[in-house]
Amino acid sequence: MARFICICWLVIFTCSAQAAWFEAQGQAPILNGDIDQARESGVKDAVRQALLYAGASIKSLQQLDNGVLAKQQLQLAGEGEIRGLKVTSERIENDFIYVSVQVDVLASEQPSCAQQQYAKSLALVRFKLRNREQAINGGIFHLDGEFTGKLNNLLNLNQSAFDVRQFINQNVNFNPNLLDSRHHAVREQVMVIASRADSQFVLMGSIDDVSVERDEKQPYDFFFKEAPRNFYLSTYLFDGLSGELLDVKHYRQRAMWTYKEQDIVDLSSKKFWDAPYGQSLLSVMDDVLINTTAALECVDTMAKIIAVHDEKVQINLGSKNGLKIGQNIQLSHNGSYTDQFGIPRFRQESSAIKTTVIELYRDSAVLQTFDSLPASNIQLNDFANIQ
Image 1 (tube, rainbow, N blue to C red):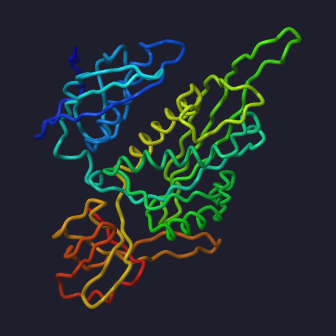
Image 2 (image 1 turned 90 degrees about the vertical axis):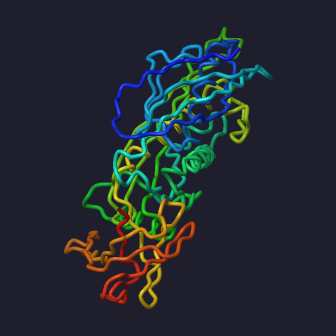
Image 3 (image 1 turned 60 degrees about the horizontal axis):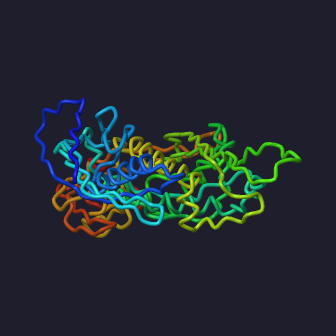
């Protein structure tokens, strides 16, 4: 029988809003016969999926207890309200529990900041596995590509916040130790990546620790023993136009490694991602999604001028990013320069030219000036401020 769960929301909104039900199915493995814990994880997964479909990103999802929110609250990155959660069905099959839910979302018509309505163009670079010798246990040398690839899929689900222009699945020799402000190599590297990926922001990362904490084997240890394994991740979010570091986050997970020392693990297998260690990595991905959404939701959205013809200019953002026909957009000149120390500096020079969107495509838009100033005063790689 379906269960209805009332969820209280701690913030009172004065703006008008519309409610809608969203349906989703979540799943979770049943580990060590613990069906209650699996059900809790399944409901959490289903709620997260429903909120992504609703165009909202979870900012924090409280502890779930047998399908009931222990603290009776959910928060959304977008000004929203969860009014109710209904678990409509569940089934157990092949050591998995599948849970279907309906979530009643009351979303605010007015975002907390104007920039929140635009999907940010982003380039995701494969995270670097720093200590490859730690990957010998299990042969998980390709964990960097598998993890970042799944994160790319998760970011692409959240299309209201992100427009992932490119997943660069290769080693770009990113070195976090060179982030000292006196060293401009990283800035230049980030700006080149952003330019090639046609994106405003760049997300990079470093997987710093995947060590297994096995006890020293004793002569009387005849049977296999599970051991905890670490997963330490650092992410670095950059403004690709300026090379500026916007945000750094560190993630720490520790879960049981259920494989023997001589096992070679298939990282692309469902079995790995359903195991405790794989589940802990999926939890980190959720946190990266949440934190990256929060870091960018109120950052200014900027487009590059990619073509100039007569009184029209074309920019590299479009309907996928939230632009609309008839929208007014202010242009600015690229005044970037290199200072006396050889460090590139980002600079915008305001332009008196105002434009409106007359043609709209998924990844670009055509603007036309509506004053006496000619568009020829704008050059390629100048900017459009989306407000």
